[in-house]
Length: 264
Image 1 (spheres, rainbow, N blue to C red):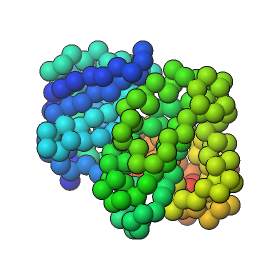
Image 2: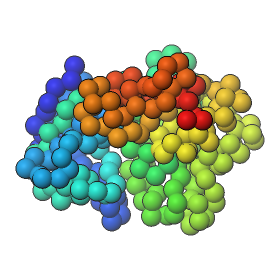
Image 3: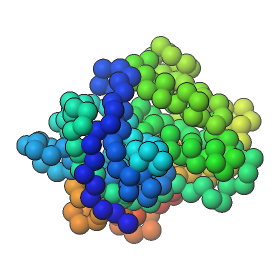
């Protein structure tokens, strides 16, 4: 059940300028959150941003009551997190949204996890759950350049399968879009029980036909601008196939690609 948690900052880890993690002490939230869920976060006494911002929960350590987020600085909300001192408090409203499906995966199966840039944020907790379920997960992590992949260090010892890196400019890993790298692996014979993905909508639009053509079940952690996080403002709607729109904060953020109306 969601609630509003006042949580002090325990630590910050910087991977590159503007790429960092923040860990808060929020015991009740740490016990309640599941892979794929998010919180609406605010740094008090800030004029901007005016509303809370949505952040995927990256990981939890329930025994210590800690909740971690992976962040890229892009505006006043993320800048406020980057400058928050240790011991400073944030408001964490959550857990919110639905979760990745894991329980139906048979032990010994293999899944693919595809991330574009800071879209890698929700996946440490997913890999923790996959490890507990004895499911191997290959991480396909792509970005424009090597700097965008600096946060890969956070996944050392976390990924339960192979890690495949790619950059648009070839500065690290394979050259090209991560969607193309993933498609080549599948065409070469890699088989996956499920595809999990998070990143920008153009990445999802490229992945959807790849998964559909191969009959691969997929779950996308969608990104949409959220004002409230619980279905009141309707700012995070995405065109849908089974109705006009999906309200992603309450029906998502995890959506099957066949529910999204890509031509809209």
